[in-house]
Picture 1: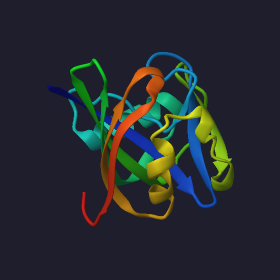
Picture 2: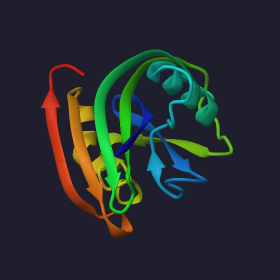
Picture 3: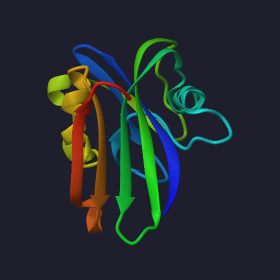
Picture 4: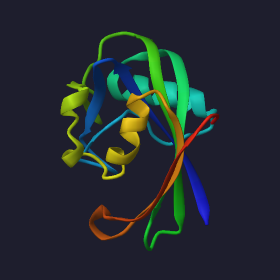
Length: 154
């Protein structure tokens, strides 16, 4: 199996988080954090680049809080996503060709309009925990298998 490395950045300013509505491509029509494929750079640099490209923010403080492996039935590629909590940033969120950012109160996170795995790991993220996991998706992005555990180090 081939593995692709992706990043995901979420800005959490308690009691709210910044998510983006994906306007095109993979995940179109879903609220998500900001991120994408790691190219020729390191994982942290990719996370910073994607955050800037997708919503115009410059990450000044990244904390890696999770690593999740995603597999889609019938696809031989595993997508390994490195999840970062952004503690400090500069700029104001602005819409890009790919994402429309919006702040959500943590009690109003739109899980029904997000990837179905988010409802499992997001509570850990919001509590400041670190985690690792694997999700296997089937038809209609239904979760067929999941493993998720809290860890002390990433």
